[in-house]
Length: 236
Image 1 (cartoon, one colour):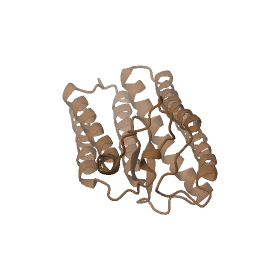
Image 2 (cartoon, helix red, strand yellow):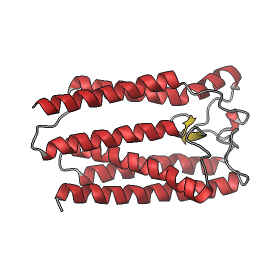
Image 3 (cartoon, one colour):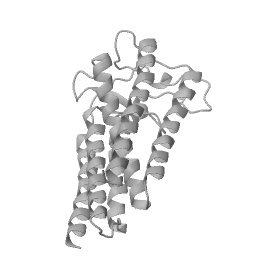
């Protein structure tokens, strides 16, 4: 077995295990806060649990970055192995939720995706699409690197990735920001220094519409960058 295949295999196993670990925490939280099943509006979370959740998300990202850094032999590998670990972790997180809780009901079920710096919400299929894009990028770059090509990401390609990613993130927080701007109170959004419960400012918030146009633009830009990389490396 080639060393790179062995590395990817172990990264996959690690990321699946991370997905189950993340899943188990969410199962516990949903049993406590949503005994009848998860649904919006969000139930306010006590400050100690909220702070723990915040740093748990930070710790998860650090662990995934660490996996990429330890597995990669160069900058490109460290980057794509982090993205790959993140993608597999996210995909299997939802797979395990489906197995254990029979949730989500469909790929278009709304979920709260992230808490930093504000809650991200969107249909389950959206982060899954991004995860598949990350996996595609990983296999393209690793494939050409194993072929002996000089693999790098140009400034323009990097700009496209960053711009596309930011656009997708904005699509995830769009509905929440619109709600806060219309119905938010003077207490503002929960932060680590807050004395109130997390989600107290949105305890009546039910997502209305996902900004598919914005998400589509962001995902399209990301895929365009991947196409540019593939065509450039193929010509070398």
